[in-house]
Picture 1 (tube, rainbow, N blue to C red):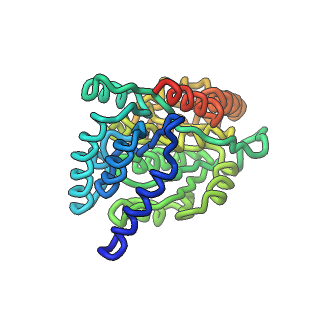
Picture 2: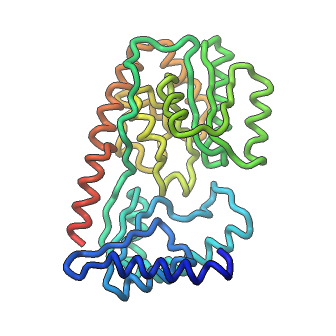
Length: 316
């Protein structure tokens, strides 16, 4: 934004909201989790026009413990939280990504209609695997904040490697400099850790398909328990073996040793044991991966989540 452009931004935005409004239909405007303070103008204008306002909540707070944010960013988020609280009280409903978020909303906004809406994913399955790679490839993709549990994953991997388990840890994504220091230190000490950096969507899909074990190792935090890891459904969609920590609603969707390997958060030892079990029992692990893909189709496919999405909109 600049002083020269912000007026035109609001003028054109309001013109579009008026153009799209159809008095003969149900008009819905959806915001994401928090209402940005700079978009309050659009919220108020749409509400006055007759739009039904909904929110799609995927986190309890962008500055919950376990996340990193600068002081300037935290001040901005706090201002947005004040505006959002005002907006939620006037909203026609909310999608929430977890049962914890649902409970929080029920307590704070008891009259607001709610719908649990998990994230969806397209099918990302590659060639069917009958054996594991040699060495077995373990993938982590995402950010590298304390909430992501990457330290425990690396420690667990190194424990397994020291027990002569033939494996390689592939790391994708990026984090801030402070968070990446531990990762760089681990890489310098082990030739079995391969950091690929930030990849395009298609490059990431190719790597996910190529690896054997896809790891989601979030710590036990407010962030993890109120949100839901988008990467988990994407991992399942590849048909590969998924290793995940029991945070938030993960246990609601997945069963240990049936469609995924579930472990307690912040446990390097359990991560190591799961890796060893997978490597030593590959056929069992591949069968679990097949069940994980079936679970994705039932729980996280675009079609199934889309039906839930449309059904809730029709009820508003």
